[in-house]
Amino acid sequence: MKIKTFVVGPIFTNCYLVWCEKTRQAIVIDPGFTNMEDGQPVLKAIKEKNIRVKYIVITHGHFDHTGGIRILKNITGAKVLVHEKDAEFLPEPWKGIKELINKDKQIPCLACGSLSLHLKIAEDNKKARVLCEDCGMHIEFFSSPSADKRIKDGEIIEFGDCKLEVIHTPGHSRGSISLYSAEEQVLFSGDTLFAGSIGRTDIFNSSYEEIMNSLKNKLMELPDNTVVYPGHGDATTIGRERKNNPFLV
Image (spheres, rainbow, N blue to C red):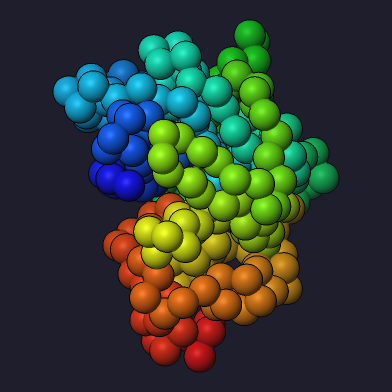
């Protein structure tokens, strides 16, 4: 199993190109880029390495992990896989923010913490924009094609001679998943586990109790030498996080 990391999108998401060296079949995990220019390094690597992308796998339905699905699917024809509990967010990645606003709940700006965010959805319902009145931060959300398959805990994703097991790790979102290979000793943890931290649980459909259960009763059961590739930031290991992560020690 070969792995190449790309940092893409407005919140510096880790997008992973993972392929079988023998068959050249691959998956792309979390294409968070929002335009062709941002996604060009990923697309270039696919072409240069003569790789056929079989699946686009989404660790959870947040916009910073889904923005490039439409571009990547149009170019590669790959099938989109996402957990059944987050599938609803692909056509409307702004759905969580919209529902919170409709309930008159205040949402803090990611940049400055201000409670002055506004959501504007395009008339064609293909994109939306969040704008902070105080600091000017703005992020565009892009609608994605619906999932070709809704995956569940315990399923095996196969590409070439490689296999990744789906581990349902709710908490950051209801449908968050991690992808694990015991043979390769690697884990793609999405936004559940980071180097020295864990995913946010102060957002729509998140739960601190659930993420801690996912971490302690699922991910921390994996071997110490498992290399962790998170949704943001540097790679780490299960052993390192077991000893040093302030949320887990």
